[in-house]
Length: 112
Length: 116
Image (tube, rainbow over the protein chains, first blue to last red):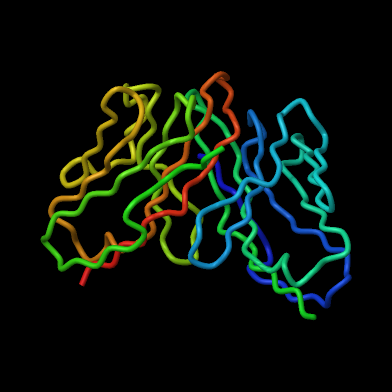
């Protein structure tokens, strides 16, 4: 059974800092990995999708990397801003029905 | 382009009452998903549709939960009767459904259900 872990559960940083959010998964036989952002009381916003054959994806100040063999992904946020404060979830797609398995998320707070 | 639409956004009911949630996916998306998200947890898949066919409902508590996707577009998830433990956010997502290895999924705002 696929398990996804995100540690720590919460993170607080000052504005302007570059930061890395970690995600690990137990079964390396994944199809893709997706990073989401969730604001309080809202749904999930897709940030980046990395296919299993890819090593990284970039969008603006965000860069996600994937090391499938070691079961790890990182989301790098450059020059963090208070507006980046949210919960960040990673999810991996595995199995015959490409089921998404989510981590519990990391709640990020960027202090002005 | 309109995103995934869900209604209602909030619902408060007493236990043993029925409740229904509605979802309209992004136009052209063949695959539709219903997830449940408990507080402090990631979403968990309840059911997945490919067009109008439910291809994965293994996590759906079938004694009280039912879903349908008539005509392969919008979908309804129903709980009858609701229990206290059903309090959660119910999220609908959709994807193009062009890859058997998993497409990018797009989520709606969710319905927050409180069962008293």
